[in-house]
Image (cartoon, rainbow, N blue to C red; front, side, top):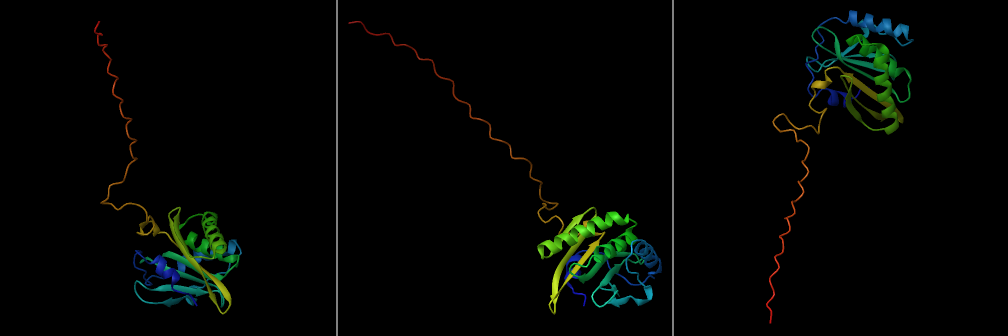
Length: 202
């Protein structure tokens, strides 16, 4: 059910995602936040690994319509956190915020502000989004399956290294253009004094 839209947008220049280290500590941190804020819990033994090596993602299905997807660094800490669920599901922002907070130690409500802002933008525009805010790279979109619209949204804390963030920025080899100097006003030539020609007397 999880689609590849997010993987395409987020995997541009990310470090390899490996599934080698156990996730027990991360799941404990997530569940502590989830329990505090009335969100669904995860069980580390019920994550499904999709792919291998740098393309491996841990996916946890809360139900038939809602899933959490993680890409892991070598130490087992997720550097990509993504969520998919029905459009308008109010718990999606909280699940994603708790995952981000557990991954980076950032305050839950700071993460929630970012996820709810991105979800609002998705629901308002009904179009794909991507960008960077507060050190997080985010990407997402809306897809329809059998008449039901689903949101998929992810955040990566290595996003500031991605090349697409500043598409309009000049390259390192290109000089940064400075302000165009205003042309100096033309100097008007000083008037030449007229010399009276003495008249000829008749």
